[in-house]
Length: 335
Length: 219
Figure 1 (cartoon, rainbow over the protein chains, first blue to last red):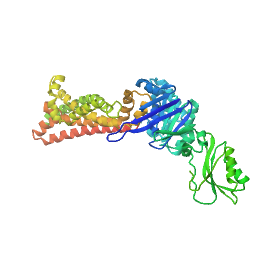
Figure 2: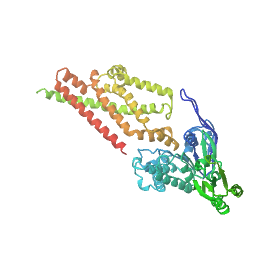
Figure 3: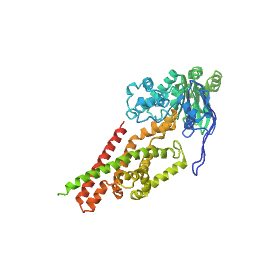
Figure 4: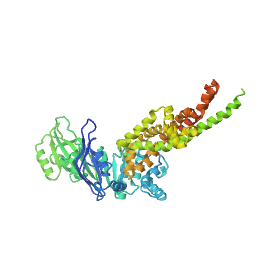
């Protein structure tokens, strides 16, 4: 469980500069076992946010609670000990070049004073978990980016943490490695019952692995919630970031209708009503439908043509009454 | 030439003196210079244990040590030398100024090496629950090792060149030998021989150091 309560982080002014408010009253609650994402443009404060969770950065005000312990109230020595139950993986892996893969995994155990035999056993087990058992004696320089991140994940899990922090963990990887690493993260969350907090600027990452997400802008949380809930809201800025609404083109034939698709409100009903019910012609002008958080979500832009459109507004009204999210769009102003 | 039978043993002695002075002062320099370099690094701004006053004082001492010409240092530390080894004359006495001259030199090189270790690695260790001393022991020093070896090699080579001045306080060694036999007796052949010998020693050292550093870096 991770809880940030009214957290502010102000970096003092550099010489001749102005102080920087990185986080401005952020509240965030990640329940135990959740896979949560924080998204936002660069400079929105998400890197600062994740570094607050294990107090690599101390908040200027506000509190940080992990698994019921208020970290911001602990002494430096207690914080140091608490960090061993919070694993962290980084964008650039940060493996020690002087150590083999196995020795890197053993590093946190060494720091915790675990004996050699037990360390060996544990690093073997973890490298096996991340699928790199046969590379135990390889140096980081001999591993690919995806392999390095797998070793870093094994290292982060070595001390049996309850919380895993991922700081842009896939941003330095190619698409294939990203998919592999995300699947691994999801799997270790499921198998070990971890609480995961992931920050990223890539919306595809959130869609692939997160149960919930918040959108950070200029140091504030502007939107958030469980993904299925967020995506079924038509007016959510986070949903807009995750599944951008298709732009209307400027052809001036027909009427444009935007449909927000969910499992509860599939597009089939809309198509049936317009094509079957009214006898209109409907084409898809843009948009996409994807599986996110286990459900179908998407935004479609339909172009409706046909001689008699007089029944259209009434039909849309009835569809809305039945739970569908449909609206007429003025051409050139789809948003 | 008949006098070579007289010169060879002296050359052997001089070589022995040089190796003795350099070896002992190199060991002491490593023992003092690496901790000083670590202290200089970790007390720096935004480093592991920032301490502006200590950092500045250490920086000043190191700069002072590095800016003094060695021949001046030799004379300047004579009282300290007498206190430590009981005399200011001879090879053993030369070890004191040699070490004092080389420690700040090595400390700066160590600082540069440690600063090159990516800050992300330090953070990764802190995130694992490392103490600051753990970070120095398990991250900074091992990650910088290839570059530290290179720094020690440069320092030992510098010690050889400093040691050539030890003759000025009766420290003997190859520098002294070259002056007494080669220069003062107009024996250019002896000077050249000494230079060749020094060159071989320096080359061997540099090669050894480079090979070791490269092997470490290839890990």
